[in-house]
Length: 113
Length: 112
Image (cartoon, rainbow over all chains, first blue to last red):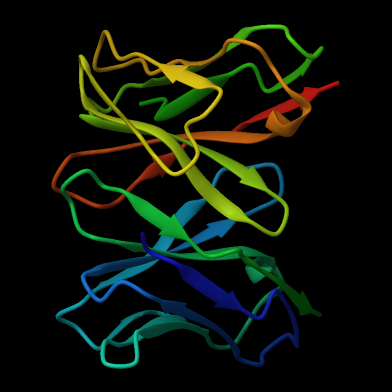
């Protein structure tokens, strides 16, 4: 099955700096890559996603890049704010049929005011 | 819409006890799934369903049963709880054919 690795496990940045979280996947058939944000005591919430036919996607301060050849994708958060502090998970999926997702182990991001 | 709801929020069980974790969604999603979240291991898929009457196993199905009698509800049953099942359990739902999943708030389970 699919194996998703995520790095780093913890990340601390100063407010206003950028944060980058990286994930690799093993199954070249995976074609959908979402990123989730999980705040303390809550369920994960989708923040951005990318499909395999796209190399980059942006949504305000958040961007995701995908390198299909190298089988890795990254989350970029610019101009970080204290409310960005949370655990971030990447995931990979073979697509809509069955909607089976394989998650990374999470990155705990702390934004220092 | 309430979205995805889960009950209870927190439960303590003794080894060997049984219980059912409830999950309901009001978005008419065909797809529902259960994950467990353990420290350092991310979320792992336990069971999933693509519609009423259809269920299948995920990565870590042992020790858990599910059924899907209605579109709205997808309960997860622990027949004989073990300490290894201490975890946080999340239910999620989505439309089949659309990958965006909506997660519930989670149930924290402690098995002594």
